[in-house]
Length: 271
Image (cartoon, rainbow, N blue to C red; front, top):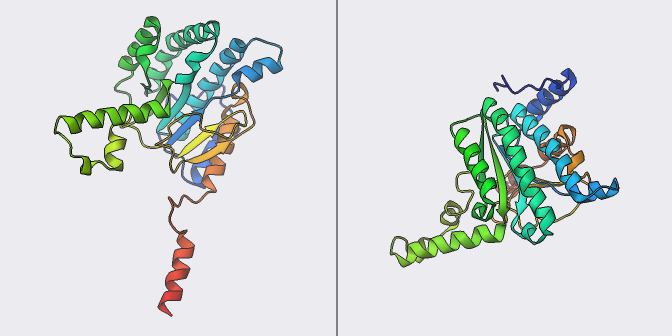
């Protein structure tokens, strides 16, 4: 893997060795999706207001994006703001939108220099105009980059995603472009917001909550799940490596019989 331009000035030789070890130990997930949870509780545990936790979480985003790029992850999706998050206090939502604008302004150039393409999924038309403009400009600037895709799930929910796919498919049936009997898994997947992104191999959730929280519901059918008690502001590359190491120890069967059991049953059948 060509990591030129992706090595952090702060990266230690030990960190680089650990990345090489992971790359040799097994498959690196092609697509990692992260439910970044625990910012508010992180702040509360320190006697601070919730927005301080969100600001601290930005540093984790930077480190995880960089580490994924160095490891050779092709797609990284971050659950940045859910549809349900619009129900939070107006002051917190406003502060989150301002933080999004600040992050896009300060980090887009670095993403571009590191050949990382920025995309987004969700009802982004609900974002404030300034946010939409910054997001659209960042997406346009990085559109031709190839090393890794960073997808921000903004004003996103899995149920919304499925509903909008059903709506689009229904319209095609109504227009006579598609027959009902032609609808299958592939057709539905092609109409989801993630149609151009492979399903996540690994979904990481911070803060210890064992739920998907309406995130990539269709796409996560066979994803490996990794839950850590670590709050998102404390989740850095070392914790990411632990998640990948756990992933590499698992056998992904997609509902099928494990390979070794299939071989044993075939051997018995031939006797």
